[in-house]
Length: 306
Image (cartoon, rainbow, N blue to C red; front, side, top):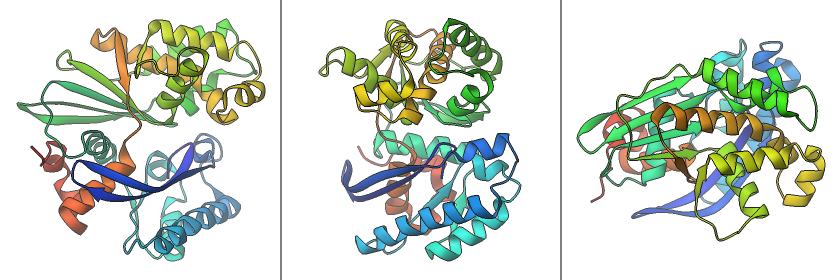
């Protein structure tokens, strides 16, 4: 349960990865409640409970015995989070675990590596709607995980007040991202990896206007291309043209600002985009460590496969 969407992943663990059975999401925009009234309220809770309950039913129909249900940034901040946890857990028949920033970052790393040991210094960045999680890891050091209150949806709500956005919005987004990026690397990574829906949709957009066979990296020229596209037409029209969700397109300028801020912070020319993260990490962690996976995340982050 994230700030932008509620995601379902049903997958079967296999050595070196997962075989996906079902993968879908529902856009609920929970982060808007965090920055607005501060709570979901009865109506919002009912919608969320119904959505998660239906996903839990799908999982059990597919043969899942113990669904893993996780909440991230909105569940850390909503004033009615305790009621949400109780109501979702009761309807889904499984506990809703509210992850802290470090757990979220480490699960993202596990999902990215698939349990393989890291061979070089790596920075993984999960750009969410309400926050972003970062984890530094190398072959000879402990994982260093952190979360910052900088997310694509939150930044968009605060700054972008028209569709399509204009150059002034891009400048303001970049300035805000730099000001709020409260994190300092301990070393320059050999590679930067971006995960999450905002990063993957940025890559999809530049691929669809360029070459579908291009590599999986985003550089500053790609970010400029994405900005040019987003300001060229309303999000509804771009969604129809490029086959992306309208709600996702609205978040891409803020996402581009966050990507560029990260690249600047670590002195990197580009970053790799990977469509794997917290959901994959949770399945792999639970398969490896059982019900006690949350207590072993630091260990699991360093991998168990050779």
